[in-house]
Image 1 (cartoon, rainbow, N blue to C red):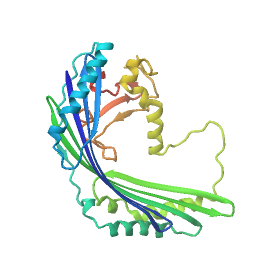
Image 2 (image 1 turned 90 degrees about the vertical axis):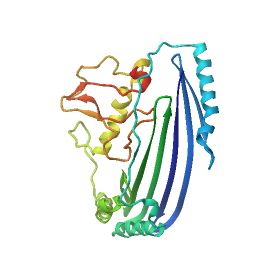
Image 3 (image 1 turned 180 degrees about the vertical axis):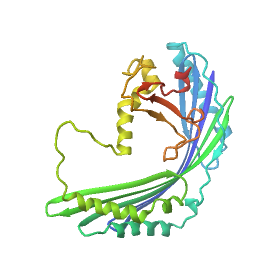
Image 4 (image 1 turned 135 degrees about the vertical axis):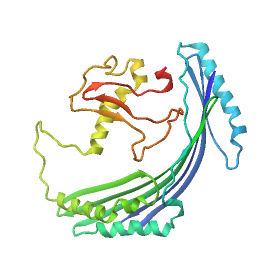
Length: 306
């Protein structure tokens, strides 16, 4: 019988400003625990909220037992032969920001949004919406043979504006989101970002419709990422392959794309989704999925890897 526990604690703070008026301030915290058990190819799960001040070690005994009983019951109905799950060796790591966003006065954050609003206020702009959010996320992983935690701060800033001329309305928006602290704000050059966003909305008022037909295009990196995620990402998930629902089953080491296409899964690349080990305790690493058009790997859980 295999079991593991994932404990997630989060502190989140956010602000929303519309047309220069602060519309919402939100501060939330949560602490939750997910216990899993694995028996004869079947999983059992139990999730509980952790009350403030509760001793986690004593609290997790019952949900682990409940998860084990669920796994045993499921395995008694339809057992499945699966090799032993591969071991993991996660390492604890805390990302320490230069400026902890929790130490920055709320008034300064409100002024940040007000400054963005003022910079967006160019001739023709009729509506603005700006939001700021920060999160301090702590994840602890516990199993029979592993114990580690990671702490990751995240900061994001989003801005949107609408320009109008006669009956024509156009919208422009931009955002920044990364792991790190409040020092990210200076690195993003908020003044230039805001001015460009407002200018883009105004310039779009005179934009012509794109011609139809098949064309060569240059894709925005974020949009290209969405396309890859939907068209290729899900098909590269090994559980879908094993279930027979992936169009990329049986294509390893074959050409499935143009030789100018390479796709990599790398949680260590600095971005909003950075992490040091995944929800199963597996240390993060760079995985090449498609290289020069050749399918080289799938994305695995510990079970599918086995």
